[in-house]
Length: 139
Image (cartoon, rainbow, N blue to C red; front, side):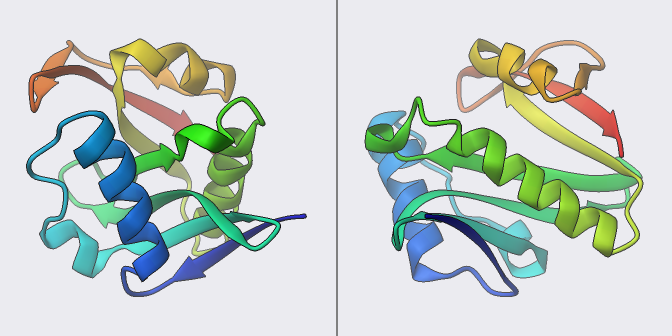
């Protein structure tokens, strides 16, 4: 059974997933920041086991809600859990009255976000030596 839960504070399950995916797997050094304190944190559970996470917050600069730190644990990939996580997050934003979403996608997974209706906007940029591109979606 798949369930997605929303949290007002960074839960330990989300912290562990992000450390596993971004720090250990991808080598990020700056994983946790001040955005965590203003975010709604989503955790996707597969049969009660934390499988994926992301955060979402309002950003004045983007004039949009921003999804970030999207991560699915390696052992759970290939099961469409990323899609389920993003759909639940989009629903959370709609319920909060949000009309648009933005995210900084790693270029290597840009096609995943395109398959969910996101469109690239702007030039590629580096974030911790990894190419990213801003993407947007109207809900």
